[in-house]
Image (tube, rainbow, N blue to C red):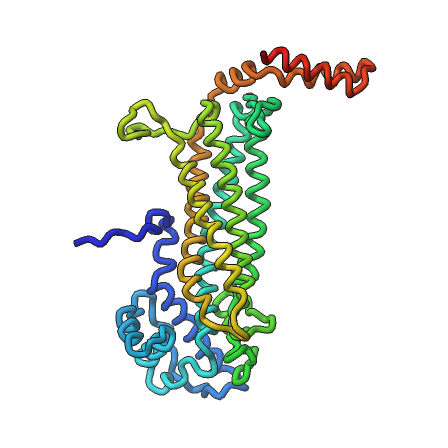
Length: 396
């Protein structure tokens, strides 16, 4: 019998498939452990001898990670990292096994391994974000977008015409602006921390941490640690993703309203069905989906903030939360960015309907009349009252 997929699998981009699985987690931890062993054996201040035969560990590949064995060991140890370390000891060459995980603690490996996965995710996120901006730029530069005027609205009411291109340009600026926050947050959190119990480097030269970081292609944490990367940095990442998704939500919401008025329509593919029972329906389902995904990402902000207040140097109350929130928020943000790109590329701009909306709500023209009266010497207050009365009379 085929097991049903986890709901998150529905929203996982192909390039991120497997990133938050047990195999990738243990593989990332394995990469940290073997680089740690190499750095310690090369250090003049480490107790780890420099004659170890640890090179066979560097022949291991992701597929060699035996997740089932690690989980079996965990049933006995009741400790995930301890079970992982036990497994690494078993596969390490003779003479090197007793030096596995020497002078470090669980969080050194867990946080560093998590940083590797976050860095992998961000590489993909950068690509899909750039593709989204490119798609918006192409649409904004198109003849239709430049030449088509669209009724602008405030408070949901018609206000003043604008070009479709100007709307797209605003979307571009807002997405680009909030993405700076994601970049800054990932720079702060995707770091290697190898500082031992309570972060005091009691049996560890900080140079070892720097060597491991260099080998893994990430910066060392460097700031005073408590053996973990402080969770305010993770909270900042989740908040930045919530902000990014808030802009995605804003764009999708505007498109749903434009779609509802027939001005800018979400694409509708051949063979697509808008309703199971009403053949005439062409619903903006992709944009509705994006609004829902944004809600899910925003819901992770409060738990992320609560994770900041760990007991003293650290506890484990953040662990269970992060097993959900990091895979969900990062995956959904990447998926939503790809989906919004598809939406932008497939938009249909109905020039006639846009113009019809402007003509049907021409009361905006009284603003021009007010400005003309002011130029002719009438006081602003009197001009405003006359223009307002004209608009009200025309609306009756």
